[in-house]
Amino acid sequence: MPQRREQRERRRHHGRRGSRHYDEKKGRNTLGKVIAVIQLLISVIFVGILFNSGMIPMKYLAAGAVVLLLLFALTFGMQYIRNKIHIVGIVLSILISAALAFGTYYFMNMHQAISNIGGAEYKTDNMIVVVKKEDSAESILDAQNYIFGVQTAADQTNNEKMITKLSTLIGQEPNVSEFNTVQEEAQALLDGRIEAAIYNEAFNSLITDEIEGYEDQVRILYQYGIDTKLEKVDQSVTEPFNVYISGIDVYGPISTNSRSDVNIIATVNPETRQVLLTTTPRDYYVTLPGVSGNQRDKLTHAGIYGVDVSMATLEQLYNTDINYYARVNFTSLIEIVDTLGGVDVNSEYAFEAGGYSFQQGVNHLNGKQALAFSRERHSFASGDNQRGKNQEAVITAIINKMLTPSMLTKAMDIVKELDDCVETNVSMDQLSKLIQMQLNSGGSWSILTDNAIGTGDSNTCYSSGSQMLYVMNPNEVSVNSISSKINRILGGEKITQ
Image (cartoon, rainbow, N blue to C red; front, side):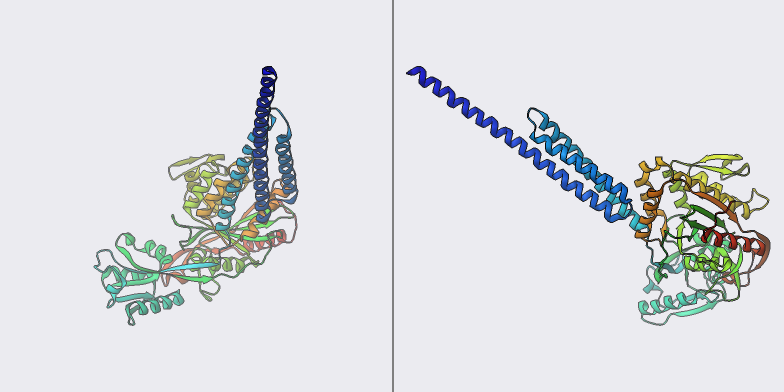
């Protein structure tokens, strides 16, 4: 009898152990299934974000979704297998979920950065009140009874808005003294004939060209941004289009208005996969539509009045429509090239500039070298014409580098840099379609270049009053040839250099 009781006790004990083991195994399997379901949810979120971005072609999106579904089926199914296989399934599911979570975070940040780059709807004129550096005024209220100078040569609408704003701030109509040009106004401030000067900050470049050391003798007392809405673009990026690439002659924030030293039209035909880069010299002597009337000015000065004026000027010159723009400055070029790991630029000549030596043929350039290469003109007999060709060479090198497969690993870094140093009116939706189009079709593009030429001269400019400045009279044969080439590419004709 005692022996039977002992046997029954052992059976009960083993039964309890088996039950506990079963419960523990069941618990582990349940945990694995929950983790696999979480993996599935993250997969759905990841695919949904890619789909909503509009960047990824459907063939890649569908293939990716199938792969993720198969991975879920694998990790979930492994929870039904005995031994240690279910543990491998849990570890695999955790790794896949972590990778998808990182990918989701990465792509959301990139999507936001791209969104920040595109869709510019306004241009901003930064109107300023400037006083001499040693002036005791600390705020605009301290200058209530000052004599304010204004120039009458250009930008009258913004001047009037600024004076209205000042009237509100100081509680009275400001005492205003008028000058023919902004240079005369600035000199009057330094001479003490006025106590404050009102003008668009973009005119600083005109002042400093004539008055050496001006910026070291003055300070900004008050500034007021005036936003002007730009015309919305309805052109599809899947159809042929023109992009105006404007390089402004300043460092720092891309929003700063300034002269446009680089003026390139990129004519893009997605169907023929051709890009024509056309450079127009900064000193081209042209009229500025809606600004200068029949009086001519340098093309570079159009940037003072906004990117839309530069675009309208080039549209009129070449008898074409320019749909989009992209503005970059000196800082932009340096950062973009460095983020790409440098670019290989072909130089027609051997020359030195900015402390660097460039050989004839291919040069691997970093950001500062690329900027020096792009800005030099005194080393060449054709001066600004050759500088335009060199700028085209740098842009061609950047485009070619960005289209290489190795750049996929640097996509986020590139987009982040563009976020800070490029301003464009291309919308997020249009940028997404461009990316999708390139991913979908792949392959290389044919990049052609051309540049307008002219004859050097000296003449007065709308933005500078009666002051005589160096200008370049357009060569009509060159202009007409470029106009024809632009419109032939837009029309779908396949052309050669």
